[in-house]
Length: 534
Image (cartoon, rainbow, N blue to C red; front, side, top):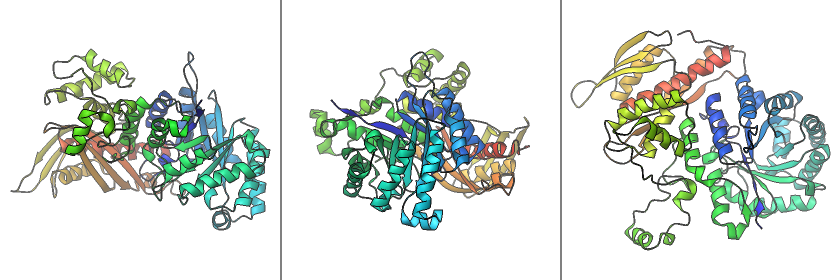
């Protein structure tokens, strides 16, 4: 019988630490709900000590996602903490209302981290480990301990540190390859030696947390599982610090597709993978590369004549997975301009969305506008519309009208009309190097938030000349810092992502830019309890 591998998703914690990937509380709860529908075993919901908003988001996830209702599945909700009492107190406040709570404490174990970051001796590190793991265990029975930078630690000291954590009450021991330095052979051997040389480890679950700096995060995690680990720490789309973490969809589908080799089972509902991936991509404004394993647009595409011929004769010639297994499938119900509200709502339900009547009404208006311009509406079109319009958090400034003049003759000009927070409609016209630049300058003149456009990416959601276009932008700004207490250590330049979708790419670009600016205002509101006054 296949052994169960626990999937520990840290998209909302390690994934959100990726520059520009910050998410609002509403976005976090939506992702947590989607992870629970996938039957992820443990959700690391955040780092509660980081900010009041992070604590509030973890608490909301614990109360709304971490509680079983009418026998429904509820994952373990986990909060991260450094080996400090205030961190552990905050983590416990965040997760205590869940049916099953976990506190995850960590302390560096490698010589370079102890000497230069902690400025502690090995003896002091062991003493701190014992004290803080015991303190966490006095609050919560499920304690995970991580020796940070384990893959570059001295083996004998690592065994001693893990034994200390076990004696103090740790129930899960996570072995991080914090900087992605290991190779699969090395990392697998590390797990094997930890199992052989750590007293009491037979009573704990060994976890692996791998980073992708050398492109081996998933391979290292699989090597760890083969050598005795039974929990894998992953993120959706592999987002995370620097080059990212082990990608959840890749690890899960490797175990699923090669089950006869690994003999492991995750329990993950793999048909939710595609939608989960797109949701995280839209909320973080990180586009999914076409050649991304499992969920890229080319993952199940064939252009070569030889490949096409083979697939037509037998799909197994060039496909080792079914697209349906990860939630990529064509619908037989065609939606168009003659479709009604009920048909559209039913399609959204089939796609896994739970929308209120008001959200359905908002979406239906956008659906009709698009249906007047397209012959048929695909699932991808609906994904773009619902993420762009229904999931907008706080709309301080909303697009009310846009007029563009551009071409080879004359100067590109944009006139933008926005609905402002005070209810007033304001209009401004600007000249730019192109229509999008002109539109952004006009918006800047109305909104008056200092910022620099760092990234701009556009791609078509569907095929054809009438395709819906998606735009992702990144805006760098010190607006949050300038509107809050300058002594606050959280005040620093922010890089915020924005997302927009429309069949007019200039409109999609404006929506994406406004989305990023609205997020900046939202962050200042959270930090300063209403810094923005319009």
